[in-house]
Amino acid sequence: MMKQEQKPNILIRILKSIYSFFDTLLITPISKLVYVIKERFGIKSGVIDRILNKPTVLLYISLILAFACFAFIDSETLVLHDTRSVVLNGIEVNAIYNEEAYVIEGLPDKAEISLRGKTGELYLAQQLGDHRVSIDLSGLGEGTHKVNLDYNNPVKNLKYTLSPSNATIVIYPKISEVRTLQVDVINTDKLDETLVVTNVILDRDEVIIKSYKEKLDTIANVKAIVDVNSINAKAAGTYTLENVKLVAYDQNGKEVDDIEIVPGQVIATVTITSPSKTVPLKVVPTGEVRSGSAISSISSTVNNVTIYADDAILNQINFIEVEVDVTNLSETKVFQKVINKPTGARSISDTSVTITVSMEEETSRDFEEITVATEGLDETKFKASAASREDAAVTVTVKGVASLLETIDAKTIKAYVDLSSITEPGQYTLPVFVTGEDVKFTYTSKTKLVKVIVSEN
Image (tube, rainbow, N blue to C red; front, top):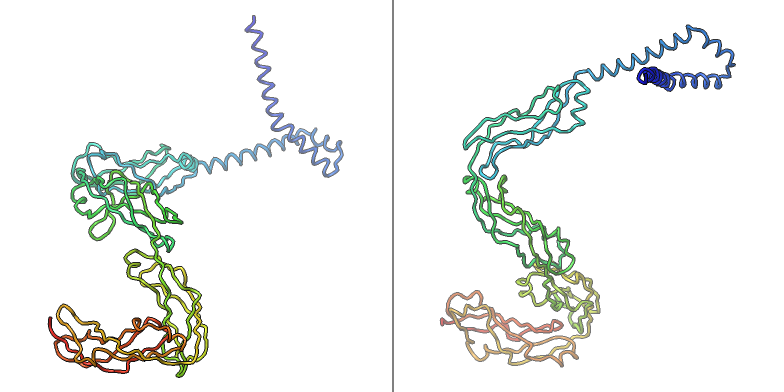
């Protein structure tokens, strides 16, 4: 009895559901549309009621809606059943083989997949994105083989073609060698000019390289590429650089591909220093001042310059010269000069200087018995001596400002002859040159020529 009573209840619920469905999707929306039209255009309710009460009106409305639904579904069906094609580029090729035992050459890195089928299925394939191209080399031994590529084709109804569809590969036995690791420091020009890399220590000295014998024989060295630009050093100190890349090179310095390096990366400890040296700035007058005038003082806004360079360069530099042209100068003059960076130096603390040259009336003073020295002689083969007592010493006239001449020391004056061109023993008559430590003076020898005897050791 209970089952017989439940059947009508179930049927009633089904009918109510169907009514509710059509009421929600058709009757209620159409009623609202009619109401909106009536309110919008001011149509009286009686007119609308008389129209809707006609059986043919509802029939026409139903036919129009049915036709619209049919057209929509039919257009979508045509689109979904239309046959098209798409191309998937750059799909990685996965090779299946024993990587510990073999090295493979000739494997394609990427493949192109052309898919053809219904639009809906093509869309589904693109949305899935599960496209895998593989080449199965398991079970193959050493030698040359022609092997087909395989595509997993996640949507089975689609037709496909692969490019390339096969590959001719060569299988080699893998061997390993131990190589000493070298360091290659790059981008040092990106460092601040005052800084320099002085030392690099790696966390290991050797690495293992793996490939087939013929390829390993082409490798000249393995280097750790230390990129100082990635350190971003702003001051001297010790920096740790992790994940340093290792690269194998052949004898021509070209990178060798497809080489397995174990480990693949190392850690580098980089020491950055700032070697420098402070030297005096030496102002050197060039040319001759006007007759009757002399330099009384030379002052500059920069007296010392700090040079940044490698130690080998710094050891060769004891001062920096700046020349000022005093030709025909008779009164005080201010010069703006550039301080040139010494050869090999990376940076200097000052690049310009203001120099003031003051002038006064010229006087002179003689210094007697200034010994004549020799320069430029190859002393491993020859020795030199004055031909006479008169040739051994000269009188030097020094011109300058009177107040400064009184303070000059004869020991700061040097007279000499240049023997650098002498290649044979003999007696030679040579000009006398005179220099002094104070550039504000001019130095001349009253004796212009002296005789020198050169003999073999």
